[in-house]
Every structure is written in structure tokens, then in C-alpha cells.
Image (cartoon, rainbow, N blue to C red; front, side, top):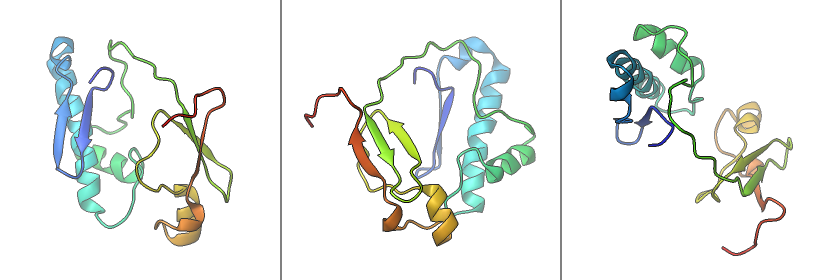
Length: 140
């Protein structure tokens, strides 16, 4: 971990904390632990539908864990490493797009369109079209 304070690994019900947090403060370790625990709690409460990582379900879990108004990002002194985004994922229906560093390994669809037209479930009609950002080499 270089820039992130912590990660909730939903499939394993694990929380990973950046070891550099110990150098910041004990309070920051506790706050980050609660932040990540809120992700696990939100998933536990809503196991059968897709939820936004820092959406309403997560905010409700934060309130229940005693950290209302928790921010989705931190302002800790971790030095960022910027990676060039090489791929664009574009929704064929609404045109929204997202840039990614790596090519996705599985089919992904536009969450906005899936929510609006298919109850939040994956729909092949809204599968992202993937292309390389101009100027990038075409090798795999």
C-alpha cells in the first residue's frame, strides 16, 4: 500500500491497514479501521445487490459505528504514485466513460444504466466498450 490508508477485502471479510498509519497516530489507525469496517458492514447488510463503495449504505454503517460524516478519502502524508491510464471504458447506451490503468479481466457494465434499466443487475446491453487511449502502443 502506497497511498491508501486501508482496504476492505469484501470476499474474504478482511481489513488491511497501511503499516505507515502507525507513524501518523493511534487515532488515525482506529478511524481507518472503522472506515473499512463500515464497508464490510454495508456489504453484510446488503449481500444480494450492488452498492456504491461510499454510498448511502456505507454512510449509514459509518453512523452506526460512531463516525458520522466520514470522508471517502484521507489527507494523510502518503506520497502518491501516479500511473498513466491507458484504457477507456465507454457505455454504449449513455456514453459515460471511465479511464483505467489496466484492461478489466471480466466483463463490466455501466452501473448507472444497469440501475436505471435493469434493477441494478448486470445487463450485457450496457457492457463497456474498451479502447486504448490514443498514443498508447497496441501490444497486449
